[in-house]
Each structure stands twice: as C-alpha cells, then as structure tokens.
Length: 326
Image 1 (cartoon, rainbow, N blue to C red):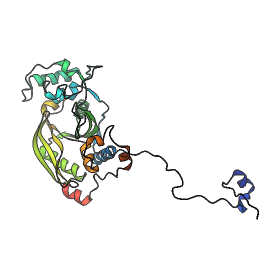
Image 2 (cartoon, one colour; image 1 turned 45 degrees about the vertical axis):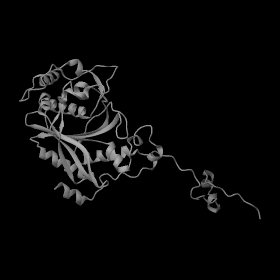
Image 3 (cartoon, helix red, strand yellow; image 1 turned 90 degrees about the vertical axis):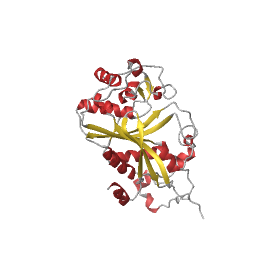
Image 4 (spheres, one colour; image 1 turned 60 degrees about the horizontal axis):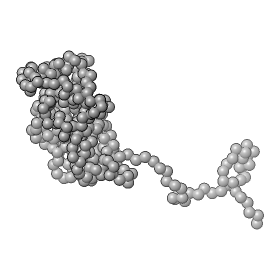
C-alpha cells in the first residue's frame, strides 16, 4: 500500500479550500513527561509568612506605613523615642553608622528643640534624663535598628496634620551590629503594630494582642512585665504554640511614653499602644528550620525555596478565633 504522510497542523490553505474536511491528521503526542517542565518562580518562605502577617493587619483595619528609609538619622531612630544619647544601644558595637553621608536630619527645628528640652529637663511631670543633649549625635546617619523609627515619623505627621484615631503597621528590614550565629543575623525583619486613640489603656493593648495572635493560630497568651526605653508600661508576650506544644516568647509590647508623644504635638489624652515581633522566628518555627542562616542569606539552599510547603499561619477554625476574642 502507498504510504501517505498525514499533516500535523491545520493550515490557512486548508481552511481556505476546506480540504481539512477529508484529511487525516497526525495524532497528538500526549505521553506524560514527554515535554520539558516550564520553569517558574517560587516564593521564599519568609515572604509567604510576611504576606500572611500583612493580610492579618489589613483585615483588622490597619494602614501600612512607608518603610523605604533603611538609613535614618539618630534623631528619628533614638532621640524622638526619648532614648538617651549615652544608651548602650547607640554604640558602634550595636549600631551600623554611615560614613557617607555621615550626618543628616531634616526634622522640623521646632520639634527638635522640644525633643531636646524633654531630654535635658523634661516636662509635663517628667524630669527628663538630666544631661546635655548634643545635636551632632542626633544628626548621625545609621542603618535603622528598629521599625519604631517609622512609627515615630508617622505619629509626628499625624499630630501635625490634626489628630485622628489611627491604626498603623509595618513589616520590613532592620539592621543591628550583632555577631552572626544560628539565631541572630545582622539584618532581619521586624513586624510592628501601632494604635493611636484617646484614653487607651493597658487593657486595650491586651485585648488587641489576643485578637491579633488568635488570627495567627495562637489563642493562649501570657504577659510578663518588661522594660523598654520608650514604652511604659511594657510587656513581653508569650503564647502557647500549637505546633511546638509549649510556651514561647512571641513579641514585645507597651504604651508609648508621654515624653515621646507630647513633643510631637499629640493631645494629652491621646495614648499609643504598640507591639512588635520578628518575622524570622515564626517562619523558622513553621518550616522546622533550626539555623537562621538556612532561612536567609547565602547559605540557603534553592531547593528549599522551590519545595517549601504552603504557609499555614492563621489557618485556624473561625469558632476558635471568635471564642478567643470574646
């Protein structure tokens, strides 16, 4: 019999002269694995957990703060938080100082003067830190050591624009001059939430923390008194982690001091509650990572990025969330 080559494609000519009607086409090759797998991007586990935190804040009605300033002046990072200039955290062994440009501070001069006065002699019932505040120290450029510098900028702008109740959050990188080991890096991510309103109390902070962490799957919380330079009272947050089956420290919290808020121009009856935690620690717990260098940095294996599972953070029963927040 005569061998005939069957066409593999339907052409324009076949459509035009309608010769396709009586034609026999080659069969498609649908053998599994016959073709090359298309390459595609993969989401880093840290970004998966970051997105879940972000969605949790947005669901609770928070607005995201701009966090594009990796370089901050010492004024916004420390001084506006009423952290004294002789504090150990401002030394070179804890903070990265910029060489070029080494100094910059575009804060309004009247605000700088009010912060200086609060440091030196206090006010509104405070005696301050009783030392000679130096402008040159406040103007030093650093890599920000916490996202609270971002919160300070937003709260100052809120006070200047005319106070209104507000809820803010930020998730971004911070930098500290720390020795690198299995649990510490010189660069990591901080998650921060801030609520500003009239007559807020410590009870409001505890209630918000229960609601926030319940959405992340942690419905049992404990609080321990702590010290922070710019919050009073301050609390460490502990939660019973359902994956680890034990109590773990999950963050820090407190109420911003009046010495910080009043120089900004906030009304005296306005209080600000805030809390913060790292992004790396819950990610390590969720994905069973023991060494932070296996999560972030040059030692991380590309295979773990391609094959990491779905982020289960916050996937808890709705009834459990409701019960925990009542």
